[in-house]
Image 1: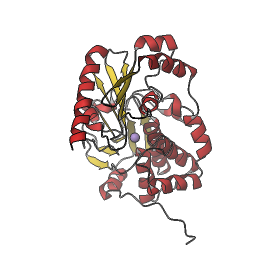
Image 2: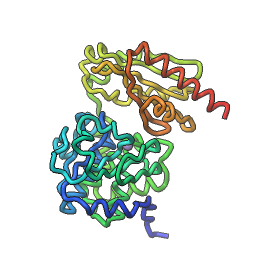
Image 3: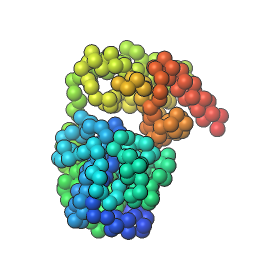
Image 4: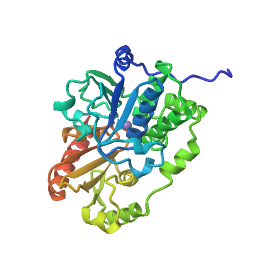
Length: 332
Ligand SMILES: [Mn+2]
């Protein structure tokens, strides 16, 4: 009765353990526009591999976001893959294109590519694929991997992993948080991850420029009778607020909390002229199918896509697809 429950293990495919033995130098790459899970899972895995005597280099096309820029060693991220690596591990990455500019198939296509991801929309692009949609974060997969391999979890690695677990679950508040996830979080705290400090630095801290950006975006709030709430972030707003980071800092989750709404969307103009579309939805409303149909990906309750065209082109197109999805969901 007093025995603590070890967290239920998510199974790690045996070929993954074998693949991890097969290299000395590896690039661990995560997705463009990284979030806390992308950064935490990459650094967690990099440090675990180094503790096993491997050379591991964290790679990301884009800068570490403000939310997790306090993590140790974030300055180790590189934007190009060194030419002499023996293998590539992609993490939290649903589609090969989400690696962005660092991954040139001409240069690296011949190398083993180990795909570790928790998105149900993953396209299985690796030479070894471990896709586990039950994991609430790629970080949770790193935890189960370390346990399966009997790799010790240091307080620093536990901190990386818990940070990604917390960011992908918005502080253990998403519908997919269950007893297993709570056990994993508890174990990470027992291993030395400072949950109070992580929460304070990750969730209770935003740049003033971001709050100013929200103030400019919120007057453009629109509500559709189908239960869709949406707004825009333009380049001009970004300029006026002095906020250069592309991430909306949680605006889409904030507006989706409005009572009676089923789907929240933020349309963000990108400097390259494309539009980033970020979706959130209520439990039971799977918005990832729309994101996937638009060439993006994600999770049932949190997903996104990047589209060509101006805001005026993109908004009606996306709203029509979301409305159609809601109509079919209503009929089902
Ligand atoms: Mn993730």
